[in-house]
Amino acid sequence: MQPRYRVIKSAILDAIENGDMKPGSQVPSENQLAQQHGVSRMTARRALSEMVDEGILMRSQGIGTFVSDSRPMSSMLEIKSIRDEIEQRGHRYTNEILLLETAPASSDIAHRLAVDEGETVFHSIIVHCENNLPVQFEDRWVNPAWIHDYLDKDFKAQTANYYLNQVAPLSQADHSVEAVIVEKDIAQALLIKPKEPCLKITRRTFSRVPSGGAGERNSHKPSSTNHRTQNSAVVSHAVLYHPGSRYRLGGHLEF
Image (tube, rainbow, N blue to C red):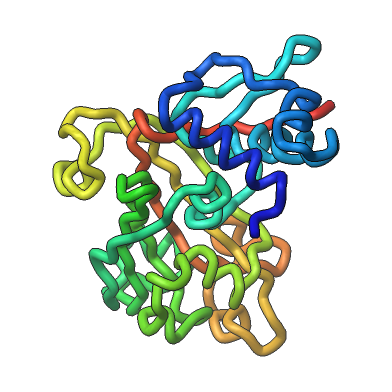
């Protein structure tokens, strides 16, 4: 049996997906939801607060809570697995693995991963779907010094980002966002029109160098802020493409 706050979340999600509640529609108050579902006000507040955090609802101080823009929203302030994002919205996650290979590092990839040009690195391309609709094209390069068995992992069961953070916990990240028109093959994989704009997120992740670990094996590499800072080394470089019509980035700040 689902916890009561999840029942409330499911009811609101159903109303949004059925069109009964549209972007900008006001959601019943905590007191109204508590009365409708026979729960405490605290339980109703938890349901609304989680949906605000997930970007599904938005609060206006002193006015009420409203349905947000219908596109899913990812936080700009933290790095989550795309699977976690989708499942937290109560939706179904699936993916399509387009490529898992070893490849020689180009000059650009070698610079980003802090390896020698031509050195063998891991390369994966995975399309992530929400309710069977593609929402992210992930093009990722991984430094094998950190994860030698990366290509053997079942990325149907867990995302690459989740797995990498388990074996090489994130300590730092370079993160940039821009609007782009993608190449034809990416547009086809995302099931969008060739000229439809996308959000491009470029992300390079670092992990702390363990004693006797990958960082020491690569100690002949130049030590610079491009490659390593504060005893951290590059684990992966990923370029993530999201259809602009299906995805947003945002977050909540308190001062």
